[in-house]
Image (cartoon, rainbow, N blue to C red; front, side, top):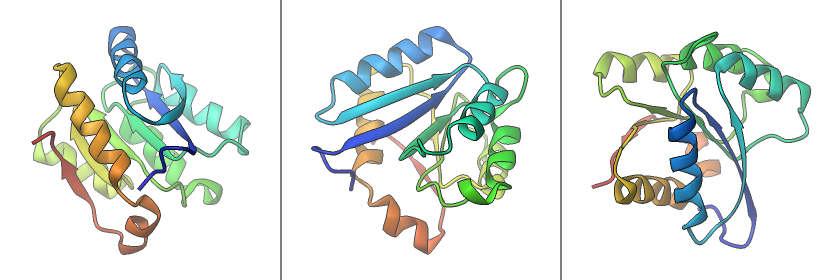
Length: 150
């Protein structure tokens, strides 16, 4: 579980400005101290991670469908670098509900898959559930799962 008093470093990678604003608004309503970093595509994300290795995030929400470099490509590239293999969480954040997309993201190294909700309440529930998971312990069992708001 991510402690309410600690600063939780969250990265959101999404090409849609409205979705980034929506995500940020929901985060501000949660009882957690969050430092949010945003990237507009997978290439920008990978470049940002490589140039700032001291700021390893606690959670990464990564959209699948983006220009320049999509989420799966960025995830594979990130997981190929030894300094980023132990990032506690990569949660794939996508509009896709395809089981094929879910399987591909897990193969690429994702720990969890969530479908991008358009409803404020559902997104708040999803993020709350994600923050309640003990990701450090969870990463040791290496199982993947799909998180839903229900």
